[in-house]
Length: 156
Image (tube, rainbow, N blue to C red):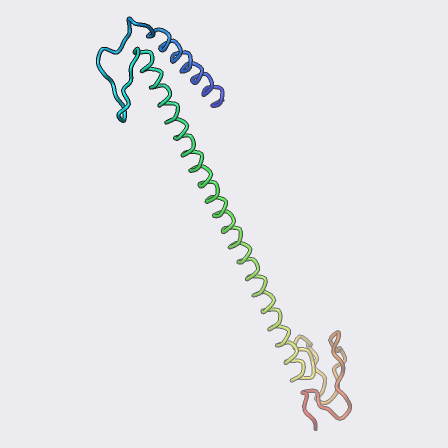
């Protein structure tokens, strides 16, 4: 929509410029007073002066367009960098949470193992076995104490 509107306005400006230059040409429209820009004396008709104005305006418009395009690109780069930083922080928070969960699981496993070795039974067992005898329910992966070794890990 904006592109079509921009093209219509640009076309109207070009038609106006061409009509202004052609309508002010010839000896009847000669510049009556001298006109100089940066030491360059403009001679001719008011149409020529109008044409120079159009060229200067077009150059100014091109410069402004380049300036805005560069600012837009910089803005996009900045927003992309902020988006990347936000994602990185979210990933860091998720990894930190996972690390904290794993540390908690490790500490719980150590506490469970320590209570099992101290009592000779798992801490959740409602019926502890007598001291010195292996528990009836040995946790998965745990070996019963060797003969001549007490359940708390020390030698008799």
